[in-house]
Image 1: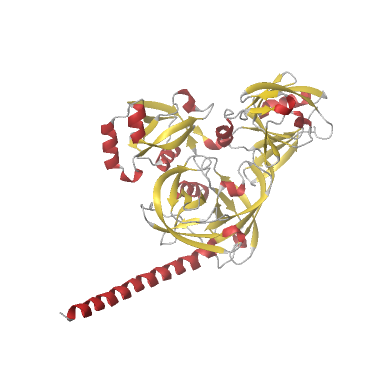
Image 2: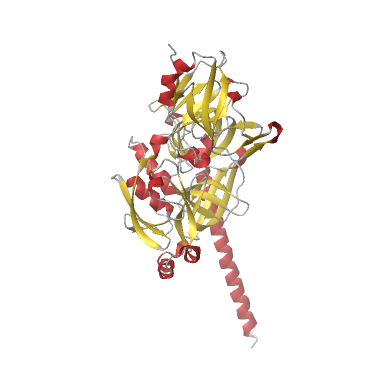
Length: 490
């Protein structure tokens, strides 16, 4: 009977040694990953001089070297400032610096590719490739970043959701149960092979959000083959929606839900549903909010938005086949695809202190202005166009969401129209501008005015000689710079 306590003590000691070895092995693995990965991490200093609809300011973020030979550095679109003219400098792990050029950013997914000269990358720097295998639920992951440009940070965590939809635009997102602070945007999310499975872009106090790595990996493959990445869409804003709610509120067949739960357990009984449709997009003709996207080209999605996006990008035809549920009925619908990159803002006109552009997908979603419509989002204080009433102020800056229809009785629908009409417009000092206000409801009690969203309005503008020499800014796809040209007025 006395041998039993001795046996228990031996088992306790063996178990303690075993657990200690596991902890030591895990610690050694983390150290190896950190020491190798940190040599691929860069700090990105961004300065935005001109933007169609974002702030002009300076900030820092994180990125990582993906390809030393090509000089590719991966980061977030919000780190480089999409639809903007910026200057970028990267600081490598050892303190060396190099200027970078923005060669690609995505309108929908929060990632961008910067390029530096390969000779400017330190020889001792490492690179991080994207994993060829998708991660699994509850898989352990590692994040190496440069938190607030104050030094390297290292975090470990677990994937708690594979199919979340988050971001400024809907994108397939990994949810990670770790906590990172500001400055970590653009950090790689790594597996134990030191391969990237995603790119960190946001989060909260108890979790972080990372973009699905498949988006970036496919773009890099195109760029390395000197091809424009294939990016297609139908123009829907999607979200994850509970099938239990669909059963209760939209007559969704319960037997379909039961089969779905068994077939796609990682989806947690959520499906891709349409939250909104972009004005002027192909989807606006045949789809509506509340439709459940069940399958694309007969391939069930199982809540995986990355799969839906990949199917759209790779499709060679004009109209893609969707299987949807609407009010409990299963329907098939063909919807035309459009090239997302054709909507990118590659041209802007500065005239009278205002920046004119054609609405891209992001701006259309946030404002409600139709795709490719002639728009204004920023006006310099004290300029000619600052006489347009201010409908909204953010951080002490005037913010506009205007679709421009007409100037001096000349109809305008795009930038080409504006270029053609500018010689006639600038001949007059006093003009009238017709526009539609897409700002939220606003009551200016001080002036006894009531301005509601989506109103068609007019503004009297006095063109000052100092700011009415218009010029056009064009993105050069070869040099990856913005060229400036004065617009001829005679």
